[in-house]
Amino acid sequence: MVGMGSFTLMWVSYGVGWSQLPRTARGIEYGLGAGTALLLGASIIGFLWPALKGPFRGLVPAYAIVLVGTSWTAVRVRDVVLWLGLLSFWVSDTLIAYVKFVAPVPYGDGWVMGLYAAGHGLMIARTQRVMERVGAR
Image (tube, rainbow, N blue to C red; front, side):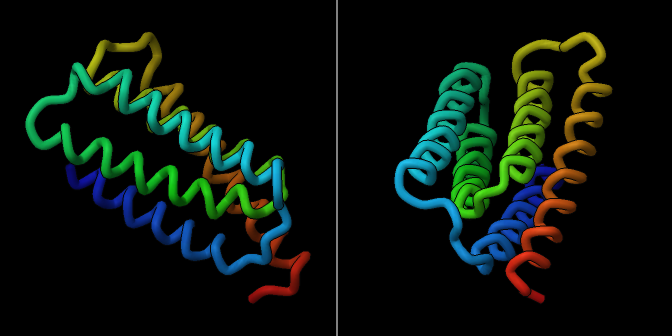
């Protein structure tokens, strides 16, 4: 549970930062990105729901809501590499949940850490580049 709390704070921090960047994705482009994030979040909760017990029945959906909200701030920025980093992190978090609540995955820890590192690397590098492009500090 502590891990979920720290990751929630991280996602809120990313979301606050990305919300400060100028919106470059609009209309259908933004709608598709935001809709995809919502669909992914709802699908993951729906898939995991039967396996969730006790406090995780509230914590996992709450975490997914934060992840969807943060994703909405990221898809405002038209940067496919940033979106790939975000997707990489989504898959990493989903694997963590799958292993914890459903079943082990061969080499699961390796996949989780590889996707986690790739996701952070892509998100941070592209966020820095976008900030430089728009002159943000």
